[in-house]
Image (tube, rainbow, N blue to C red; front, top):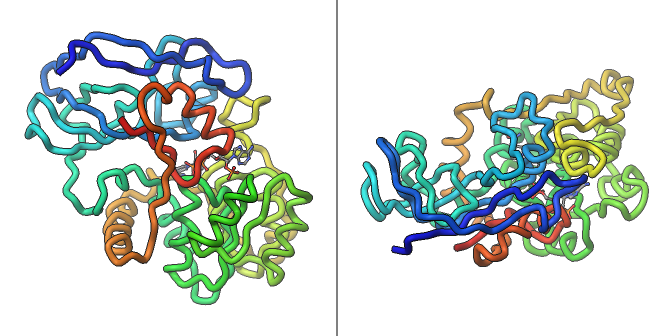
Length: 333
Ligand SMILES: NC(=O)c1ccc[n+]([C@@H]2O[C@H](COP(=O)([O-])OP(=O)(O)OC[C@H]3O[C@@H](n4cnc5c(N)ncnc54)[C@H](OP(=O)(O)O)[C@@H]3O)[C@@H](O)[C@H]2O)c1
């Protein structure tokens, strides 16, 4: 084992959206596990847009602490136990990503039981999509489902899950023609709407000419405005994310205003509800069981974009924001 390891720090507070130069790769002595802690050699960690909010500083109601200049980044990680109270060699999931070795408390590690066929799949962000599609905005046979941010970590699983739960037509939005093509070819989307290619409402009307019954919204902004106008009678809209505000260079990442036609909502009996996993503690286990079954049956894919090596980690969040990934962005060590 080396005497040192590498980790990623926030070097300075970004002006607007973070760029690679706002992060630095530093080398430090290997941490020693204290009482009740486990030394874990990380193999994978997730790059996620919520980091922008933690860095932007607008973290009211966010269940994770803000990140200041000099702090080590953190987030979901998979690794192998090297030392401490858990069995050596076991794979665990914990929150000390963005470093080669972590020392999470044993009580805060989840020992992976092999329920998912590939350990990396534990970093999948599908449970929020599944919770939205089964609790807040239940899909019924024959529904048309819109997933905004469809090529992202949540969206790539939301569209496939909607189909497995009975949707007849699945439409998604994304930022690039190449990703739109992958949504159709690899993930079974019927149509993809390109954000920025014209008025979103008009593009959505072409993709979903009979309106939408269920919306899994990870974006907000004009896409949510358009989704409300396209909502059929009794439609259910689940707000899962807010990328439009979270990744707005002129905002701090913790607000996302959108214009909603409330007259349309009430005359069409449309429900709009926010999804916070804290309110749905039973979802994670249920999702994981079904996700595992679907993966083993070849009924669902877990798309992710590997970012290979710690050297590339400082640029990984800006690359995610720039739309360079398809599915989850995962740093592989
Ligand atoms: N409620 C929950 O429990 C829960 C759980 C997980 C995540 N979330 C939230 O769900 C949202 C999506 O998360 P994710 O992990 O799936 O992220 P993600 O989609 O993988 O995030 C990055 C993508 O956002 C898109 N993007 C970039 N700038 C944008 C902009 N200005 N407007 C719209 N899209 C933009 C780009 O995709 P394209 O190039 O394809 O547009 C980019 O690749 C986030 O707000 C996240 O915080 C909520």
